[in-house]
Length: 196
Image (tube, rainbow, N blue to C red; front, side, top):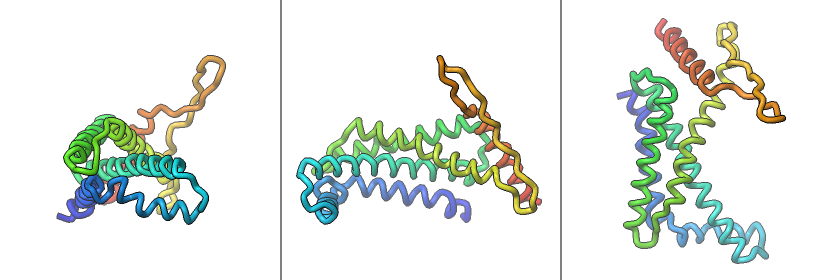
């Protein structure tokens, strides 16, 4: 029960927030009631065209953000809230697929709401958010992995960047599979330390 509350309840709550956001409550008409006065307060001489552009950008950024958060929560729940020990690429695909299915169902739900419309473009933005979320999560946690442990022993470093020739440019990169393998090794060593 503790695992459910800690890892899966946030996923369910966030799914409910997204579902609520696809109702009439978060339609363009309702969000403009807050956004337009705020924009006019920031810049009193803003044009109507600029307001429409800003509102469009804010709404699309909200799509990207809400699905990035959903993907992070799914990632966290599957990594920590289950006994699954799968490759990182399979986990990433499962998270991405779950977010994509929910994005499609969310847009279908919007097509049933009178003041909302479904959009394939929004599904694509949502799916991009589902890719960005775990990428940010791994990037932020990568910094944690390179810090010393509490007992003063240094944690292993991530694989060093290596140069690859691309035409006339040299690009520094770390193979994603190396980072993923490192994350799996690090997490399994953390689990062993916690068990002791």
